[in-house]
Image (cartoon, rainbow, N blue to C red; front, side, top):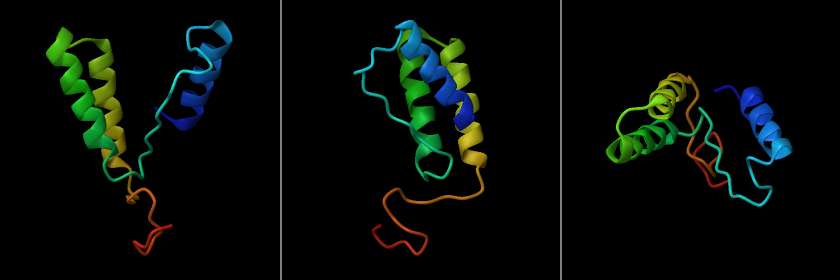
Length: 84
């Protein structure tokens, strides 16, 4: 899901109360080298609990988009690989 859509969705959920303002949220970006793997693992775990559903299919679609992102970085490192 594109960043603009994520932000809009979170803002709407905050407005309608379906996302409490103090609930923790974690965001992964296409540039994060582990992002696709993390999202696929999340989908695997969800499917082990409830079987394949819309959320797991959507997560796998996002994981594919994350994997296809052309620029990969290790979070907390600059372009040269040094700690940022």
